Amino acid sequence: MYRELVVNAIGPEIRVALLEDGTIVELYVERSDESNLSGNIYKGRVQRVLPGMQAAFVDIGLNQAAFIYVDDVIDERESGYLEHVYLSNKEEEDDAGLQSEEPDGEKEPPKPRSKSSIETLLAEGQDVLVQIARSPIGSKGARLTSYVSIPGRFLVLMPTVDHIGISKRITDEDERLRLKNLVLALRTQNHGYIVRTAGEGLSEDKMRKEMDFLANLWTDVQASFRTAVSPALLHKELTVTLRSVRDLLTHDADKVTIDSAAVHKSVLMFIEKFMPHLTESITLYEGPEPIFDAYNLEVDIGRALKKKVWLKCGGYIIIENTEALVVIDVNTGRYVGKHNFEETVLKTNLEAVKEIAYQVRLRNLGGIIIIDFIDMERKSNQEKVYTSLVEALKKDKAKTNVLPISDMGLVQMTRKRVVKSLNRMLCEPCFYCDGEGVLLSRQTICNNIYREVLRLSHDVQGEKISLRVHPDIADLLLGEANDIIISLEKHLHRQVVIYPVAEFHIEEFNIIELYLE
Image (cartoon, rainbow, N blue to C red):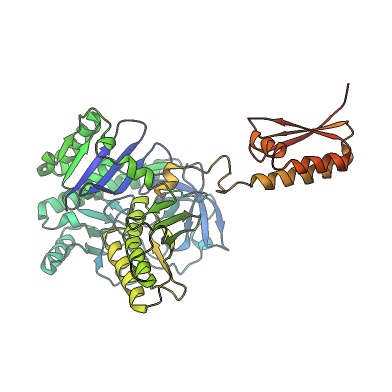
């Protein structure tokens, strides 16, 4: 499979698309706001401790207070470092870093469950060193952790734990053992490390240099913490372009194409410093049309923002986002099948599985995901659909957990969420319907006007009543719903005059009394 990174850096935002055989499968967007902050390290100040929730709000200088749960707070009274015995016994680790935002599909470092309560660990006004584990999403502030992890090209430094892990994607047992022993031999402090996929075959000299680099970086962070006035940013993660190059090039991408000369130069400098053998993989796009248009990506991105996604067979899926979960509904649509209903349903569900796995990855959907497949009578067909879904999700580097199909035909799954989904990143609630997704029907608005006029009739003394309404409502009241106006005039013994106002919201109306001169 040929993979390519396409970077659109001309304009007010940076977009990085990962293509697999010419099809966009992942999209990363970076703006100069608070949407992509995962991995940043701050000196924060505790604003409020909430014993009832075993959490605390921390001011790190963002518009919205961040929060930290008790299990994410290091109990420094026990030890400066956490012993390996408290950690997961699993020696095999995914690459540890910033999954979803980091395209390497990596996992956060293991940590023990706190035996202390939040009020014994934190106090209001206390300064704390924290890292953003999840960027602000919707009405939720950033989620913080005291378990800092600093990713490099080959290693991830975990200065708060004593644990050595090796990427699962390094499968050779002899190489895994060699790398673990090498890390143990070279480290000078009880810092934890995870060897990333790119570290396979790494020489002792390169590993020593990276360990020294990460250790010096952590020393600088600690020094800044002692001198900075909270809230303060102590360490900022790389830009989305450099992160993508660092994490995807070599193992997940064969080529990087960039449309900005300045960004192309910065990437080349980064490559020459850390991966000089990959310099030839970086190219500058100089075509006449925008780079995403040249690769036909804009249509797929626009499709990823729609609720309805059509399947090739004629069926479709509906994707609805809520604050806490995502609901995906599968429908047969125009597909009527050829032989029997069960076969039609199975084919639709199997095709939907591929599209769902693709859309979940492209849209970066996270949290709880509920999939309502079309009901299947045969257990064997249910197993086919479930197995196909699990298999299709293996391409996704984000951590997922899928439960079997329930008796109601539902699949419950979770996908780790670190940053905003594509929909939340590129869209905002409709100012017209205030995010409700629906408006009152025109007939309902007319009926509401009728009741409101009756409600105010005792206070209206003029000879006429003026109704100022949206033009569409005016047309309805003067046409199909004219019986409402006739009924009001008969009941109130007053003339009702309708004035259309183009600037009105369709649900907005004013009732005004008029006097004859």
